[in-house]
Image (cartoon, rainbow, N blue to C red):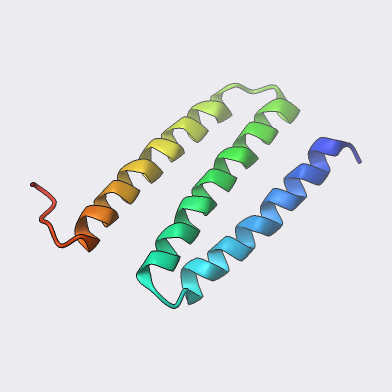
Length: 87
């Protein structure tokens, strides 16, 4: 078992904890933070898998995931501030 496999298992375990926070979060802000951290961990998992397998298209998936996560965070922050989404 090499170091990348150990890091992959740690990332997966942390992702499970983040999903628990998203599901059981006491407030919407806690759920939003949990979802942001989950997105970052998924990008880390994609990077580790790209290194292990040598397939670069996995990095494209990671980039698309982080862009969608960023747009979702901006949208939720604007919604929580009370403004309309088209303002």
